[in-house]
Figure 1: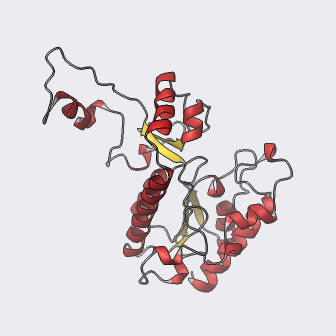
Figure 2 (figure 1 turned 45 degrees about the vertical axis):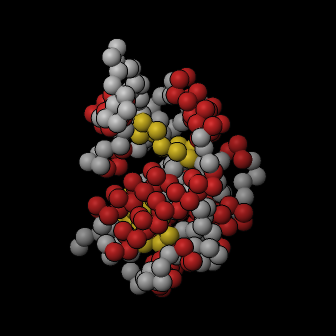
Figure 3 (figure 1 turned 135 degrees about the vertical axis):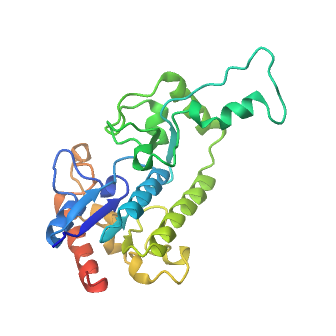
Amino acid sequence: MAVNKLIVCGDSFSAPSRSLPGTAFGEVLAKKLGWDVEILARQGCSNGGIRVQIDEVIRQRPAFAIIGPTFHDRIEIPASAAPYVPPVNENKGWGSDLQAHLQNTKLLNGYDPEAGIDNINYGTNPYRMISETIFSLAEGYEHPYRSARIDKNTQNAVKQYINLLYDSNWKLQQDKWIIRDGIMQLFYAGIPFLLVANSIWNSNTVRAAFPAVVDDKYFTLDFKQTPAYASNEWELPDKSKDPGYHTLPEGQVYLADTYYKIIKEVWHL
């Protein structure tokens, strides 16, 4: 008899811990269910990156998926850039050399629809895009899901983007569209899932964000069903010792129990 599979998408609230392996809610939940589990969620992931994770869910068609959107302070950039160098006799205007350069996807190690989950950085995979918080990129921090620091030119470019081009409210709206599309694709693919309202929507706003055809059972409409609640109730006494998922391990057990009840009593799986 085939074993069912659970896939978890999201950011750090849904990601496994490197210091306490096996304690993230997805891992605890899968053990309670007797299912296999694949956790695609990772620290610092953007909503664009989570949208790529959702595509992987659709590709694999698991028995159940849990989707946790993230904050809108994350972006995606090419893993390596190909700066434009104007030729001596540069052609400008419509059909310019610059336009041809920007539209030549073979020059950039950027998004490739055929690459699937390998589009975004998972550490050692041959990733094409870096999906991360704007702050860690702007400050040039190391990151466990990036193979190396970004170069100074890219770091400065991110800073200039933030200073001159970034609109937080517009980014939030774009992220809502991105995740909403992924959720609707999941729904029409007939894959059972739970959208955990934890950031761009909360438990009071998520219902109004989706058409009525998507039943209430697809959403956490109670704050007590969210990782944000668990991080409040099982708050870390020393945040410098965060396992990665922002709660004590007991908070992860609580979330696993909560989602187990939903899967069994609401979805009857």
